[in-house]
Image (cartoon, rainbow over all chains, first blue to last red; front, side, top):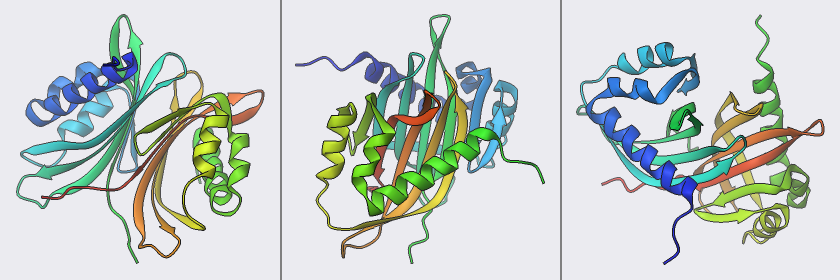
Length: 127
Length: 127
């Protein structure tokens, strides 16, 4: 059985950790960002760990549960890893919604951190 | 009026060019990839311009039309630009489908090329 490429192993582990922490203990996510990280959340832009964590901690719900439909990983320039996630999330008692999120992971001091993060709900205007 | 950041201007121009060429003259897309480019298309992986273009040219439809719902751009490591697109596409006489696609753009010899490309149709399993 062919071993999965290293970027896929790292990307998959990151994704698992990210959503586990998001759903159970959101403040731990701070360890995954640095002061150079960028977040776009539904079109709003945030830069740096403090600003990103302020946004994530203020999201207006009591509980959230993500489930992953697909994930793709690629090696990217500067020895980064690019990960795209498609999934569904359930917030409090709201209906399930689709979302997609992408991450650029960068190795800094032997630790993989999130250099870029873009999140969008899957909202379409089907005519 | 604040000017849009340069990465957003470049990303927006790239996205416009990419889908215009995709919809009207797909073989021109070859100029946007290099031999180091990676494409993930619905989970299938392709590396290098020749392999990517073979995949794109063999997609089984006569006509396609993309429309963009949202696009997000960020500066990324190694002076790259990260772009995430959410949109809809119509293939031949099939129903409209949602899709999302991300690009990493890299400047090589004063030209912005696509170093990474991940495409997924928006398929969810809502329970």
